[in-house]
Length: 189
Image 1 (spheres, rainbow, N blue to C red):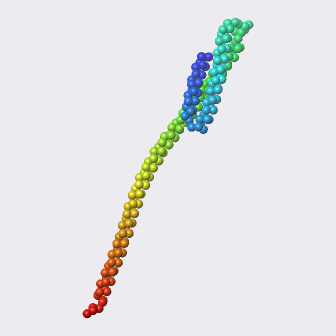
Image 2: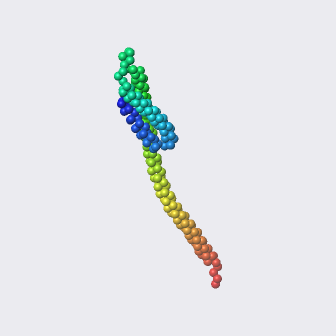
Image 3: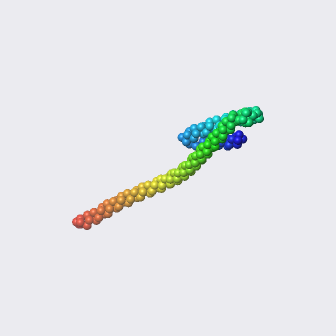
């Protein structure tokens, strides 16, 4: 019974240590909450370990003193050893209960880590999308600059064409006016 309790306790001590390590990589608010639970489990396991050590010591002392019988044929320390066995059984039951609680906490930590990994993956995808949008915006910006230059050039040519048409029209009007003047002018002899 004592050996069995000792072997039940060892994996839980390792689990608590693993949970402390895993808790370091969790975001701050969740880390604090889980850290408090882990400390509670650690304290509970320390108490159980202390009880187990005391029970082992008592069992060792009783086995060295054993062999004497009372009036009813039972060993003199029968009641004490029964109480020790009862305490050991209670300690073993507490260890099993703590084991379930630790398993639950370990499962929660794993779920939290999975959620964290999912969030980091989603953030990475969002960063890539934002980089693509930024690159596309840069390309659109450079294409807009080219379009503005082309429009300025077209506006300039349109203005030049209008000026040329107005000058041509003025020249034509001037020529027509001169022709009309010479045609309507009496000839001097």
